Length: 202
Image 1: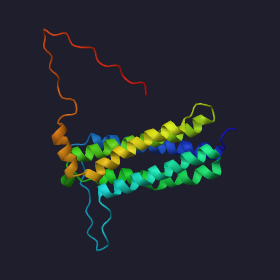
Image 2: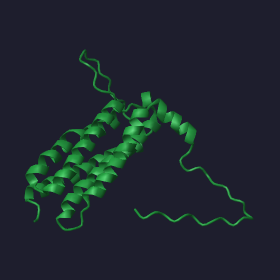
Image 3: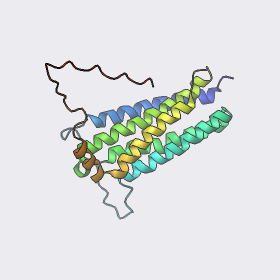
Image 4: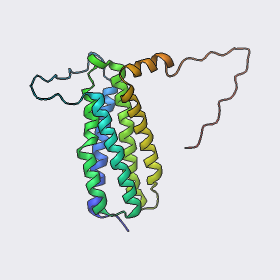
C-alpha cells in the first residue's frame, strides 16, 4: 500500500532539512581562524546551557533511541499515524540540537581540529538518519532496508558518542598516538609492491 500524502510530505520535509543541516556542518569543517565567527558567551544570571560535548551526547542518544523506535514501528505497521509523530520529534528536537552543538563548539576552547571532527561525525549521523528515513519511502516500492539503514545509523552514533565522551583530552591523546590519518608510505624501488587487498562488499 502506498504511503499517505501526509507521510510523503513529512519525508520530503525531512530530506530538505537534513540536506540543509548537513551543508551547515560541511561549512564548519572548512572554517579557519579568519572565517569563524565568535561564539557568543552568556552574561545572564540564568543557568548555563549544556556545553557542546554534553549537548552532542544528549542529542545523539535521543536520535538513536527515536530512530530505533521508528524502525520497530515501521516493521510492525508502516502506517502514518505511528511514524509521523516520531519523525516530527526528531526534526524539531535532537536533529537541530546536534548541529547547534557543533556550532557551539568554540575553537577558542576546543581547537579547530576537534570542532571539525565534531562536525564531520555529526554529519555522518545525519546522513545515516536520512538513509533510514529514505528506506521508509523506498520500502513501499520494494527497495528499502530499514534494518541495514538502522545499523549504519547506529555505527555513526557510536563513533560520535565515543568521540564526544573522550573529548577534549581523549581526542587529542588519540590523535597524538595515531598520528596522521593517512601517513605516507615508502616502498623499496627494487621490490615489487604487493597488490592491495580486495575491498569488502558493503
